[in-house]
Image (cartoon, rainbow, N blue to C red; front, side, top):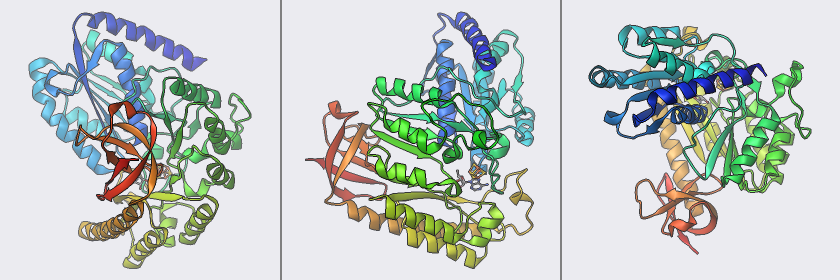
Length: 471
Ligand code: 5AD
Ligand code: SF4
């Protein structure tokens, strides 16, 4: 109830800003960094901003408002932010561009301090926990012409009913839980996104039913630790609204599976330690849940996994993969791997390569370990020199690419069901879609096919995409 009133208050600010902006034909740009959760947050920011009278533009020079939705999981996103901010200084001075920075920064005080010191022209700094208050921040910034810093240091609540402007018309992401309680020793997420909290099953299902009514075909359930949905609530007896008997991730999947109109279901990112048998069976028994499962490995070395606080060993990970492969026909897996974690020896790295060879992932997201202030791993003494990290990264990349090439060949000549997503980004005369295993397929076809599932014959492979032909 409390959060409902807070949202009502923000609706009033939306109306006020809309009034100030009326007939001004204002434009905005948004720059999103980081994960799919951040992208989903950006869609909510866009929803609010568009209700306040701004229209989106891709031309930075035409913008009256620029919003950065940032990420601090790895260092390169931070560097990108500072580079872009430098570029905007002139536009700020000459045209009075309003600049807002939001996203994962809570407790990353050195970042907010750096912004305030080096980029004093930034108008608004807000955090993931204060995203819903953006209309108020913007109003105050415009009306009172003062700098706003609105980065809350408490664990966020769940806010329902924010307007949302979705990027896509076929695929939609739905955040089902926020925060993370795992504290992997390299990771800043538990500090910036706070404790785990799940949305009520009813709110999630109503959102997805509405999406299905609007014609969305593919739903991706999002959460930092998506398969521990409602776990904390159950363990700590935190009350939540009961709905259709849903008390776990497996039951939520089952309910989403029943929604008419939804054709494909994906979810990211699960944690291997929470991958329960009921979820495995649910995937096996569902036509709609895609058979590409993301299963973050991080390292193949039991010793490094322990230092990372991942709570599984190399063997347990491989056993889980075997169990999933034996129960789910046509399963393919993708993963996240970090190279160069403090103390990683040559043998530890070999263990990672060994797991990659054994599992034969469909896709591997590879990261060079990046020190994050405030995390346990940052305090470890045995940091790995940059050139060794890069050497290992290149070695892993070469292995992964050779496996992808090998794997791509298996598609040639097969018939694949493709959900057609739109025209190809690189060639507007071609259409683009994805297989169940999330591979991009480019093919010639009529635009009317967009939004439909069709069978294609795969004719060639090109590392990051396949080419297909209509049967
Ligand atoms: N350095 C490098 N990679 C990281 N990730 C998270 N934190 C770090 C870090 N400090 C990676 C993990 C995670 C993905 C989203 O980002 O692999 O699964
Ligand atoms: Fe970070 Fe680990 Fe939580 Fe994933 S599970 S968000 S890697 S702390």
